Length: 438
Ligand code: PMP
Image (tube, rainbow, N blue to C red; front, side):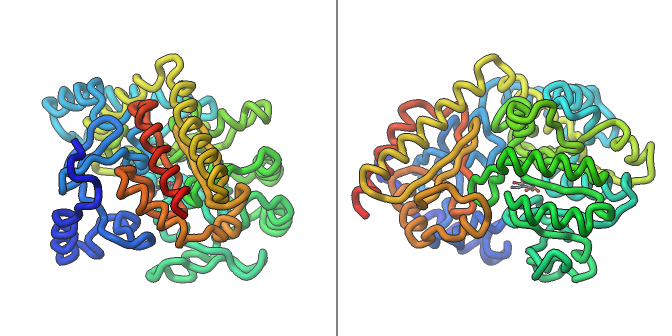
């Protein structure tokens, strides 16, 4: 289906021009605009399995999968059937349904730290609500986050590190008043010394510490086991709620999320609260936040922390999420997905090594990252050392060969259960070609 190659952009470009007249920057979420890598963003016409076709009729192997949700690939027949059936029963009621109870039960059953969840419509909403709940439950104002971690675009979370541990962060977006971020402390990822200092200064006035356990918003950087263990100990010692943002990693790296990966190395390990999104909606707007019963019961209508949503627990989104969870819960799902992802990353690493190109990579389940760096970075500053011009050339070379990678070096990549060994081979051949040329 690729008679013309992958470099035709006339229809995408025309759509982009049209879009820019009515939608700021022509996109409804900034990274879609190819601002970092340059060139014309591909307007998607349709998708199936591991592929999408753009407006110019060209097929691409998709390693974004809607930035994580499409873990089964696009258009899985069981998911389509569930969604079609749900559609005929009505789109939204604003009244409770059995399906949302079932989805809540299924999530809680698979993630041992959770007693209860509340369903919402986006990861942003889930993270924002989790923080409100943590503040309400502890009666404290301060929150701790880490540089390079993204938790959605709620005001208090759009913050970069301040000039020292005693000073709180600066807003990274216009429109966020300093007073709104004055309680947000931003620390360096994987830095135990800084973490300990921050807790000794602010621990007893801090409501929560939020972390992306395997961070997919600075490409792919894991919190070390030692760092995670220290976070857990300090949160317990100071009564700070430890919140895992698993919007990306939840049901993506393992059935029990990244927390189940850490529990393998740290016996009994659990966060106090978890934020989820992406995979649990299977591509529909659905997200969740959850935790222990004592904390979750402080939400309205039981408790004093307000949170609500017109489309929360939407019947079509929950049908899509349930069908997705059903498929990924089948025995061997994550083993096969993890092996496929690894074969791609080790293959790319070997191709780069052969050509003498610096390359490092890591992956877990169906989530992966690679760096054009000799060794894996452990924090945001180290990720920033990547040669962005080289990354951009790599991106465009792969795109021109029909491989759709994330259009920015700060993003993780995603493999789905629909990606075949042949897709991986095609991808590796394209990467090999690029590495040989530079
Ligand atoms: N947390 C993490 C870890 C994310 O990766 C994202 C989105 N990429 C969000 C929160 C925000 O989710 P959403 O875009 O659904 O608001």
